[in-house]
Length: 156
Image 1 (tube, rainbow, N blue to C red):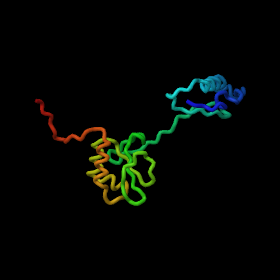
Image 2 (cartoon, rainbow, N blue to C red):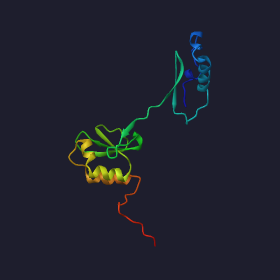
Image 3 (cartoon, rainbow, N blue to C red):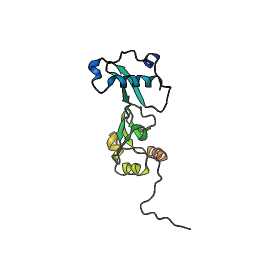
Image 4 (tube, one colour):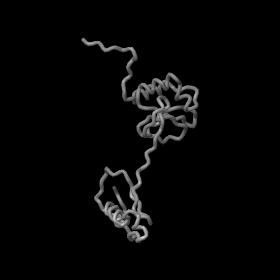
């Protein structure tokens, strides 16, 4: 965790006695300011803020999106984003930042098959048809292999 030199030692005085009656704010303020002096640790995902009420920890916001096929929610970075570009074509957005109307899919073959069968991507993106090349590209990115529902395993 990288902190600016001005944040390493808290410039604010300890809270007054009016605030100290609320659950020993002075000692928690001191211990949190000592945390700012700790060596860099990349495993910490929080940021530190110092204000008049003391030092507060704030968790980083993680965007959550819904799969158009199975309707399950997951972190944005774990889903595949398909975007309708301003010219009306649909394509895979590997970075998740392309401008245009977007839809998200779980990286599973079952979700891809459901979205293809029920035309959920077409409906979400408001396009007439999704190109076959896009489905081929998405199936290459899917994590689980496609297995027919009535397939049986034969042992030698």
